[in-house]
Image (tube, rainbow, N blue to C red; front, side, top):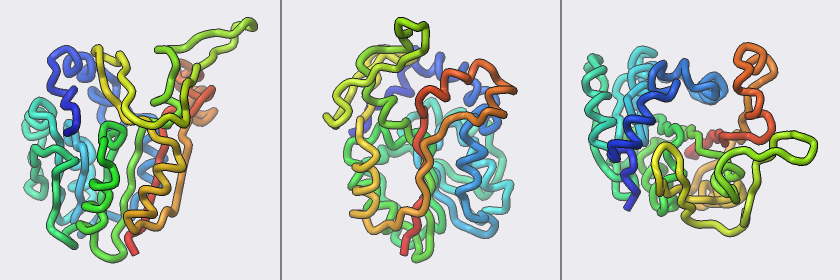
Length: 243
């Protein structure tokens, strides 16, 4: 069962103050790159896995999606999503993604932002998503880059020359890693990039795009506080087709 850290009051309060929680998709620096991987959503049935506050659900509805279903394990996240959603095309469901099953062939697009690194049984979720998509459907998702889920210590260090360093330990030792991020004891599942690709192919997907995302020089010029993010990629973005 997925750890429901987002209903932890301390975590939820701290998460709610992040730029992506305040400004939505515009506060997520990887969003332009992720958006570029999406097919047109007008007239499509869209599934958002780990929908959080519903930012993507509302964006998809405003782009003309026929139906949008947002699924999340967190009651607190969904309460805010429902409070901020007025589009009739959107519905929300509280469910553990490891147990959620959609009707076969009921969606054209499955989307997920920074949720799958919490999923222990990712093979099971991907099999369910594959079945839920129509032939020709698409899966687009982001996750924490494996270099982020395998740190030896929390936070940045500097080497003898004063350069920033992000220590990594046991990269090939996959499995749960407990970290202190916004609250103590946040459990994330560490997987290599190769494992992500293997799980997707094993579920029947054709991987069409892999991006080890970091901010562009133009983004760093506009947001100098993002400069350290070019030292190691924080996110992995992937797009897949359902043949």
